[in-house]
Length: 143
Image (cartoon, rainbow, N blue to C red):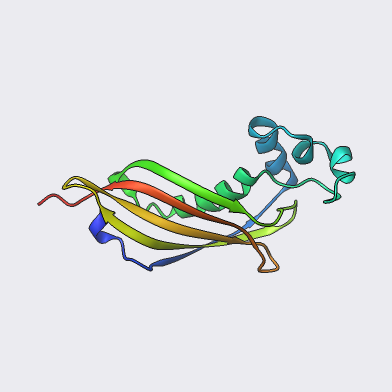
């Protein structure tokens, strides 16, 4: 979608996404190889008592559901920024859902603008596990 087609305040409901041990370990071993994410014996001795998902894994599993909607399409130019706060750990067998809201639309020039979104991710208890603000650069409609 072009910048002008996005609707301020539009909400997208994302998920549910089941966090499997296999997916968690595959991601963690490749991108965040810390014992808290990959070593069950180590994780048992922590205050969590079990493996926890890497924060980026938790974010990206839900963000991927938004990308599947293909709202940006061919009008996406690039990502600009992401700010994420992780509020609660995510565990194997948790089910994540998300709500993404278009929070700001900013024209930059006659060619492109910025779409800002606020993503809130919940676990199956409806506890907020993370909040993220993302900005992407998209094309504007040609005059």
